[in-house]
Length: 182
Image 1 (spheres, rainbow, N blue to C red):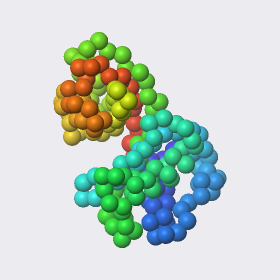
Image 2 (cartoon, rainbow, N blue to C red):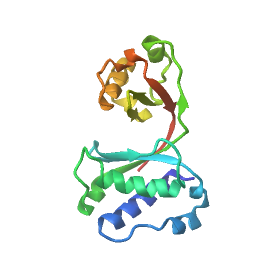
Image 3 (cartoon, rainbow, N blue to C red):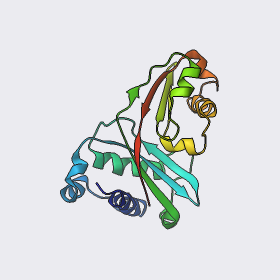
Image 4 (cartoon, helix red, strand yellow):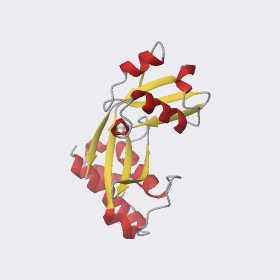
C-alpha cells in the first residue's frame, strides 16, 4: 500500500464531500486497491500552516480500511468538536496525514515510575482508561510532549481526569502507527 495513494485518496474524497458532491465510493476504490478491503484502523490528521485543524480516527479495526479512511477523513474535516468545519476553499492549504494503527495491546505496569520508564516515546501510541473515561495520543504526540511525565499528565487531562490520574493505575494500551504525510 502506497502512502502517497492514501493521502491522495483522502484529499480527493474531501474535495468532493466539502464541495457538496457525493464522495468516493468504497467499492470503486477497492477495485483499484483491493488491499483496502481488509479490516483496518486509521486516524486522519489535518493541519494548516502547521496547526491542527482536525484529528479523528479509530483505535481498532471494525470495518474495511477503505471505509475507515473515507469516514474518518470527513469526520476530521467536519466533526472534530475542537475546530469549526473546514470549507472547501481552504482545502488547498490543508496538509493530510494518515496513520495506520496496529491493534492495541494491553500494557501491564507496576507503578507510575515503571510506566514512564517502559513507554517508548515516538514509538508507542497510548490509550488510557479509568473510571469510564478514555483518551488516546498517537505516537506523533511525543513530538510535542517528549517527557513521559508530561505526556501522561496531558493524556489524563484529555480524558477529563486529574493530571495525576496515573497514580490510580489506569488501564493502559499501546499501539504503533505507520504514518503517511503529504
